[in-house]
Amino acid sequence: MKRLSYAFLLTALMSACNTVVLDPPAVDLLIDDIVFTTASDLPSVRIGLYSAARSIGSPTVQAGDFTADNIIHLGTFTDYRELGTKQITPSNGVVGALWGSVFRSIYLANFVLERLPTIASVRAADAKALTAEAKFLRGYANFIGAHTFGGIPKVTSTTLATNRTIPRASKEEILTWALEDLQAALADLPDGDPQDRNVFAGYATKNAARAALARYYLYQKNWAQAEAYATLLINSTNYSLVSYNDVVTKDFTQESIFEFGYTLNDYSGDINNYFVGRREVVPSNQVVVSLLSRESGNRSQTLVFDFTKQKGNDNGWTLRKYGTADESNRNFVIFRLGEMYLIRAEARAQQGKITGTTGAIADINRLRTRAGDGLADSAKPPLITTATQSEMLSIIERERVYELSFEGHRWYDLVRTGRAQAVMSAFSTNWNVKYELWPIPQTEIQRNPSLAGQQNPGY
Image (cartoon, rainbow, N blue to C red; front, side, top):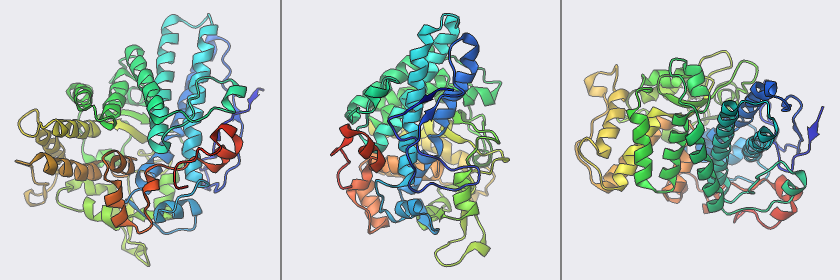
């Protein structure tokens, strides 16, 4: 049994009994069941690679939705009180969980990339595919890490002595590396078989890399490239918009491009538990009003109301998007077709392409038409006929709330568009510009001497 000490905090996530570690200790990374010495080990190594990446799902949703204006805190956990009241500290357990999951994914990818060339018995085609998967998942992890924390350590190997003292690289350097990984992955990932949706959307394909690049270029304000990659996905015959109820209640739909999938044995259940079981948090009044608006249409199915829960600060609303371990909506959807329409609409609007079949209005109207399915004409979201560029960008911001609530986008959207201060200061008197980045976990600064004095401003 081999134990590899790991310089970066691998925070304990929520266990099957839905407890939370508020001040998690550093732990070692165990490679006990990820032995990679022969070609026969490749399947288990691949499973380990995706298992590491899956741990990013839950804390990313909490970063994107809990840091922003989508929740009210009701419970007793310090971590969620800090997120809900906008008083986040470097000791926050969710902050540590996301940092740990990012570096766990990077570490496992590096492990695969280092070992593969040393194993002659692995077929060239298999080595090529696994290399591409490792680079895709490492690129995605670095993308999330850079947009959450800013500059982070650039971990390129599994060498322990080096990893213990890596300083922060710039956000730009990390994102450049992420782009290199995603582009390399695109070249070598398989197309996948769309007839097997669980495998097709559960593992990285060329289209998953294209979706990641569409989002990457949107965040970088490279509007032409964002539009181009989103268009490739929209024009693909492998995907179609499904009923929004299916978006909420089903995994691996025809709309899904890539998901972090879970089994009964490895599902943490924390998002469902915090909204439904413990009611640690509830959807904020702001997001409830947005999702119940006519513009939102049937995307209000994201939420459900129970008047028996209404008391004190509890508004009675509950999230439906994440079920329990034995329900069919337990996955975290990373990329889906609905987001690609929103990416293309924003990219087009930013380029002044507003009207016509290749304009932003057409993309938003496609989503609004889907959001009107099954509704009376008087309740269907109104279709847009005309808008200025600034009006269109405001429409798209609202549309992203309707379409993507509780999928981990809101905070990242507000920060990348420069809207965080205006929106969040109106939501909470505790909001401070420093919350446009999460803090580096305090335990990491204590353990890595190269991070001393490198905390994000204001923490």
